[in-house]
View 1 (cartoon, one colour):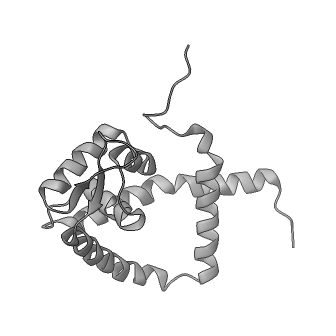
View 2: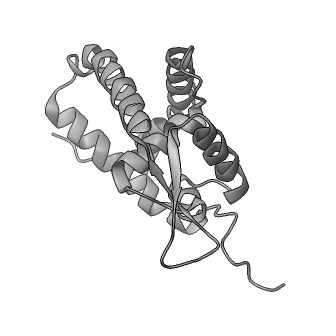
Length: 161
């Protein structure tokens, strides 16, 4: 068995990275198509998922975790609040920055969406070994962590020129 050189490994990793954009686009299109009739946008679905995982968050906190600008997340939160999916709660850490939490309606909506998504993913998952999925998760985690220095956080303080 031959050893993989660092250059060969880097080239294989690059091949993997090249697949991220088309995979992301196809996944986003699939999710968007399955949101038809729900009144939710891709951003709204992402915020519902985040709040389901973390519990109440401020707009700034949600923006950081979603790698988006606060203004974008504020627009999504406002829409979700109008639709009854989230509600404002007092933020003990910051009087002028409320926390947003899922309502019962928001929890149900996300749970229904997520159940349908997992059912669609089962067909693809059936074609993969558990070790393949574990390896893919390790690779994606390494990429996210490895390129963390290049984070484009629009709210991060910028060094003075």
